[in-house]
Length: 97
Image (cartoon, rainbow, N blue to C red; front, side, top):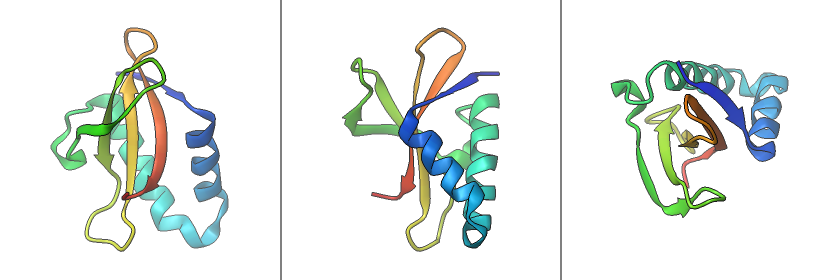
């Protein structure tokens, strides 16, 4: 199990999804993705892969995991390993770029 750390931006987006009744389905999808990520970042349903055009604040390799599929503006969770062993940082939660 990984302990999740959050950037301020990711935390704010997650809270907005949680607090907005019209985003209930998106919130549930993102919440499920975060649970799967913490347990196994390579879970096949996440379709995790490196996101090459972005690096973490200290040059960390950033990964993209699918929260939704086959949906208009499907949400993705961007993350990287660290800052410490056994941790991952949720970098951004956003519609597919």
